[in-house]
Image (cartoon, rainbow, N blue to C red; front, side):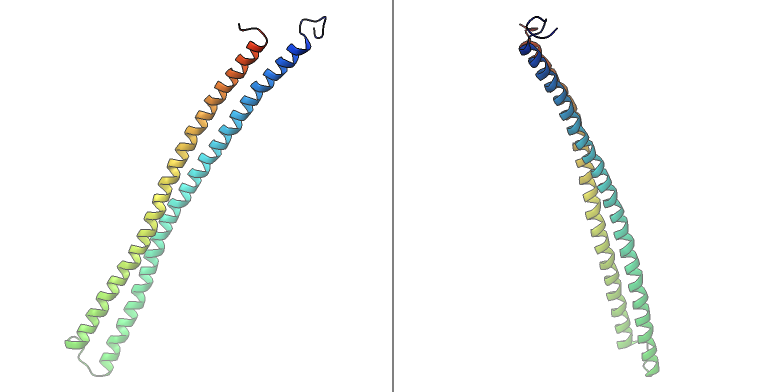
Length: 169
């Protein structure tokens, strides 16, 4: 079968082995590239899920922080009212009333600022999640391209091998 008396000479045998190696190399390379892109897609989806969780946590943390601030503000306003009452000042008129109203409005603004910071952090996390989802879609498309590119490279290697063996003229 091989050698000078056989059907295939040494050159043809080595050429056939080289072509087969090229074909298998193309297939392996394509599969490896595809697996890498699939992994990247999975990781991007995982990162998107984490970013969404971070958004929820930022909102909940801001609400909790705002509730804590409300409690501190209520205690402070109660203390103010008690101190005014102990000192004999009429609470619901003039300066004490103005101080209470000012404290209350500043407290409301601070609460809104806490919630706004939490919302900004949540929005940033959600934007990151959207970016990660796009990255996942892109990686999946690249995986598909790698698969079809591997088919093309395999066909090219097979055609080259056939041409080198004289099967195609």
